[in-house]
Length: 298
Length: 317
Image 1 (cartoon, helix red, strand yellow):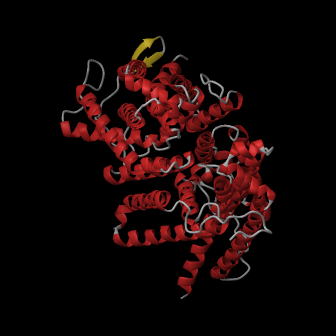
Image 2 (cartoon, one colour):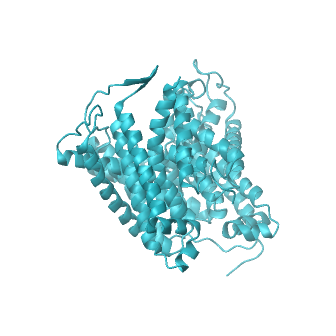
Image 3 (spheres, rainbow over the protein chains, first blue to last red):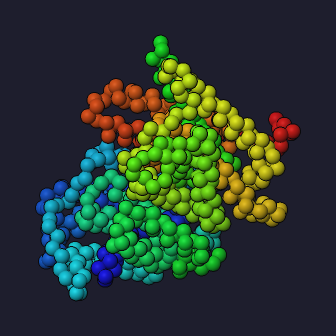
């Protein structure tokens, strides 16, 4: 009975890590980034590249089936993914912004990037599933009838650390405050001398870094596939909308709802319809509470 | 000679499915500014509806096998995809435009899942086969059958094109463009922005459903593999390249981009050995993505620019 709650929290942690980037581009660059899924994918594949470059496997950390080699690879992959994302912004999104292109044009560009990214990954890394390492997960019983793999605890722990760091960054650093200012009112922020270009750079860097963590952990838990990130796109969007798009913490809450919904769907034997059920929940929330769970009415 | 002709006819029939879908998208995106990322979903709804209405009975499905006359299948396809658009549109068209994009993306994926998993309706991955092809069997030759079907496709496209041209030149069409350009100003003039957007969205989606039915009944077989997200992307590239906001541009874009797509398949297929099939597909998608990016950056108006229309009586130089 409680098993699905445990499973749901694990997938919620991954959805939330990925969806933070969607939430930030949505609020600061003001468009729905359909390429976010591919940022997860690219992050996961960069991690694979670094794991094989380091050549020490992924290590272990007590009962957890990954250790420093994987964590170090993820950190370097975060940087590599951020560079890729910044280059793409510079080549495509920046010219469109400068031309004051409609929001929809940005969405369409992102949609095109998503397909290109997926297929470039297929071209470069191959389409067949890959793994960081082979290991046999050993589940332990944490409560009567509830079993979790130690890695799941590590994933939840990493997600909590990431959210805490994000919270401190947004509230305690000057750049974080500037980002919130741009998110509230870009014109006013600019008039007050905020360097909007730096804010945009940090938006991409933070979103891409957290997405890399999400992608790498998801790949560790399942497998690397060129479509892995794309398959996360709908849950991530649903988390964004459910939580109230303008609210970063709402996104985390939304991810929790989506993670639990998916886990319930799976436990009811509806695994094949998981994404469709997520979508229905999202539509129902939109129907009755268009501003989302934590959002404010415009 | 006959082999060439039959290849060209086959190509044109497929181009007409794409062109018709692009025409439907043009009403939504080109004239009203509605970003529909679930084109393939509405297309699939149409194909499956017509398959259920016109197809033969299968031993393992609950309903279907009605074996009805094909126009009933085509009309049914428009009705069901229109209803799907009505539901999604009703919930999301009042909200920020991104929400429509996200929701239509969701419906595209959900339809794919239903087609794959709801086996008692769609036969899942096995697909629905032996769908009757309209106008076939009139002559002995397959080529004549295909030519007749092409004429049917062109007649349908002509009718939709004529209707759309009338619509966008009518007062209703002016409001569409007014909403696209400035929603607040249109609302201030007393136009019911939500209702008009919803009408445009439903009509456009119904046309996409019709195109899906035309493909399904032509091939005679549909399965979830025929309705992948790449379709949505292709149709968008067709509209952007052809000229968003211009119905003739939409038709032209469908033809040109489908031509490039088929041509690149031939070229890459001739250059790369068959073992690189996956890679060849990926290269084509990356190329078409580049076309879109370049079109958005350097020629956002497409091949045919939008005509400045006031009404069907007035001409602007």
